[in-house]
Every structure is written in structure tokens, then in C-alpha cells.
Length: 248
Image (cartoon, rainbow, N blue to C red; front, side):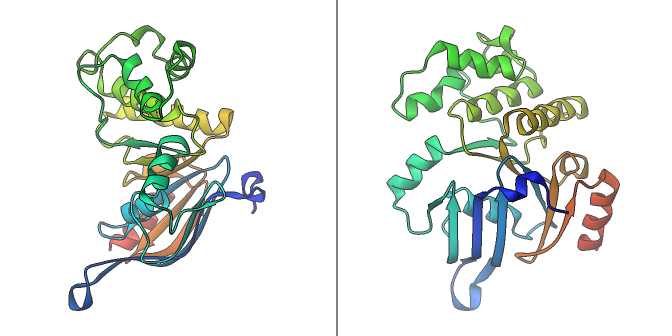
């Protein structure tokens, strides 16, 4: 069944995308002729066995790595042959990143960490816009706290606020709950779900956790660098069963 988000132009599109590491006898094809579109306002989880190419897919889709063949477009911009300067500008303004390791600067407060992407983009952060995203992730009372004064779940919410402050067209998340306990992970996933539902935030997430994947609108599965299956709004059990089949 086609969802409302799938009737809109995709925010990210890979066409015939391949990524090869090494040459000749040592060549490894991490992505193999992948065609996939990520609809606006949707949340896609990417899963697969270890070495299946899911992180490579995320990195190529985000412009962190270049495809060896095929094309990649973000927010209507063809980035396949973009210069390094163009890719840097795109990563600062069009995409947001959230990783398993929070990558917060320990000497800065939550407010200062969130403001950093604006400074890197050459903008003077406005206190109102920084406070707005911290309020949105439930940390209005933690603005002046440094990372060591925050729990793991709170640090990840600061990282999400930092990714959101530039109002990115797409949010890329690489194992965002991997370092969190069960309750903190549940809270972060609920926050990400609300960003999709209430703000229309396009989100692409790599995860190995079936519970996290089941929070998304769809789950796509990779094996040996190829997209081999997808599930729409699956249960945790359905995701776990499909992943077990691939790993088996």
C-alpha cells in the first residue's frame, strides 16, 4: 500500500549506486547496484547482517562517501560529482547526523554544543532557536549542563537537538540507541517518532535492534550489498524473524 509520504518527491534517492573498496583481486563490493528512494516525512530503518553494506549505504546517501558507480541526490541536488566544498556545505545545512557515540564536546554546555553547527556554518546562533530545539527534546532545564552532568539518554537528546538546529532536510542516524539502556532507548525512539509525525522530519536510521527498527515507517534489508526485502510498519517480532533468516 502506498503511504501519503510516498506520493511526495523523495528527499534522498540512490540510483544504481555501487561502492567498491580496493582493486582487482582485493576488491570488495560493499554496495551493489542499489536503487532506493527515501520519501519526504518518512522514517526508514536499514538493517542487515554484519558486512551487509548498511553503514556504507548510509554514508553514501549522506555524502560522507562517494559512490563508485550510479548517482545520489539529496533534496533535489545531485551530489554524485559534487566538490568537497559543496559536500561540506551540504552536510552543514541540508543533512543532520546522530551517531551511537554522542560526539559532544565535553567542555561545552548543552546549549553551546547545540549551537556549534550554526557557528560552523558561519551563522551567529540566536539563543531563541537553540532554546527551541532543546525545549523540543525535553532538555529546557539542562541547557547549562555539560555532557558529564547528563545521562546517556540526555546526551543523545542533546546530539539530536544539535542535528536538528539547522533544520535539515534529512536526519541520518547510525545506531542512535546502541549505547543506551532500554528506557533511554525507548525515550529517544519516541522523540524521533514525534519528529517525523509532528515536524515531517525525513529520517534514515541504521540499526541492529528490531525494537528500534519497528519504530520506523518501513524497514529495508540488505545482504551482500544488495537490497533484498522491505517491510511496512512491521512488528518487532516480524523484524527479528526476517533478520534471523538473513543471518542464518
